[in-house]
Length: 135
Image: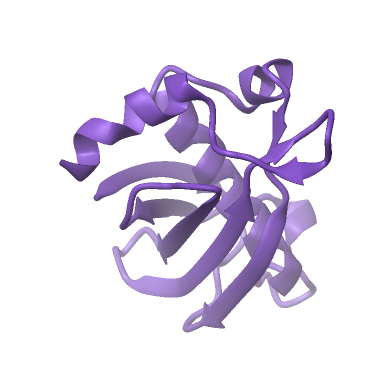
């Protein structure tokens, strides 16, 4: 299992009139978590695209427990529970500054060959980077 945590502050433009983060912005926080998790392995989304792989989202699940508030620093905990294949599954837990769990979510993405537009295995360098977490 591989877990990574990063932080992101709720900006004014991401909130509604009550100062609550707009519900659609949680997916963007998930993306930040995924991107930073990949970066922690020494890889980037840009590199994935350069080697011909894109990663579209197939499913998104969200459960809102408490609102994320304007100017709060949110901890985004991202977990991969199993070794990726053609698909990769992420779980998310978002915590406010009081370390209260405020949101849980999941995404399912696929690895897709950009030239053929067909599902594909992830690049070997990616597999080599995550393999130690699943042994």
